[in-house]
Image (cartoon, rainbow, N blue to C red):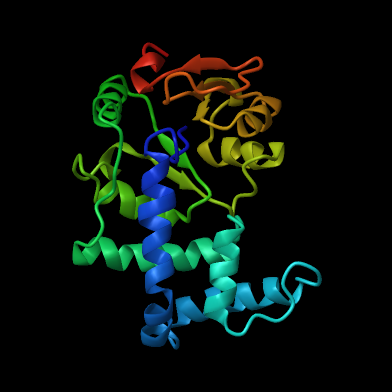
Length: 225
């Protein structure tokens, strides 16, 4: 099971390209899709979240400003992530966006597919956003290699219970699942749920606390499992 940001996809693509695109498009997107039922559901989630903000942000001038605020905080908000996913889907369809993945992603997915190994994704981005990225990647449509997708509707990535739910959904023994991420706290939670773990360190010389987690520098290091 793979994380996206820093594991399959460069961090700059997520933080600069995708987030920048969502920020630039949010106002126009809401004007065009305000009455769409799925968008209204996202708006309802965001309105409930805003109502609970008693200290950090009590009275944003508009929903757009609140979305910008959540993005500035890098909030793992389900409503925000769902809305972003819809904006990015339009961007992929129009050709404005192309999903970046590291060069070793396609060979790894092909290798694991040939070995009969299932691949799943667990990311803070919505399932729609995950599928859009891999379907429209620079390496082609990679969704044919991916069995399942999990997002914040499953639970936070730093809580053990989220990984227990994923284990049940996959119908696998936790000890047979390897979770790869560039965030040690996520791996701690996965390990607490008895998954195998690997810390992906893509940048040479970067300092990360590996703890008890195996360190890899790319997906080629995972073979053989």
